[in-house]
Length: 219
Image 1 (cartoon, rainbow, N blue to C red):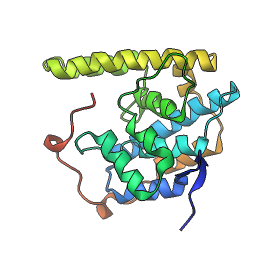
Image 2 (cartoon, rainbow, N blue to C red):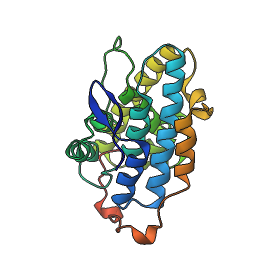
Image 3 (cartoon, helix red, strand yellow):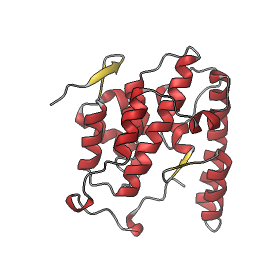
């Protein structure tokens, strides 16, 4: 088995191959596989732009964390469930990335992190399509219009996402939404692009939860 890749402060980070094997082993369907890969691609694009602006980030952690951010999708509080799964697997270097991908509260003067890159990437991807932030939240607002509790969560998360978008724009010196649309040429992005279309045969994977089972905690 391949050894974990370079790490964050001594914590283990899976290689991209290890991350892909772990995700496919959870029996994800084609849609979630494509979404996960696209979030990872956008996260790598954002992280590459941040690196060019002088921000030090672990690109391996960004790629693996992006690919695995929804590994526990369908479970109650799936961000925390996924983080726990990865902690048990020994991949401490991406636990925070996965744990914070649905809610990201950060001080205005805090440095941009790997977790924030993945968090924002997830907000710029709907299914496997790159979208504008407002478009993503307009869809969520319409979807949960009849559910006051869910709508309040959408409003809160929209404010968090806008705050993060503005922080990253200042750090990069460009619009993160434009960066998300532009290939970075980074080797990890190229590898993820191949993975996006290379999901294992769904017939070999375990069944996914029904719609009624799916956790609604994330709009």
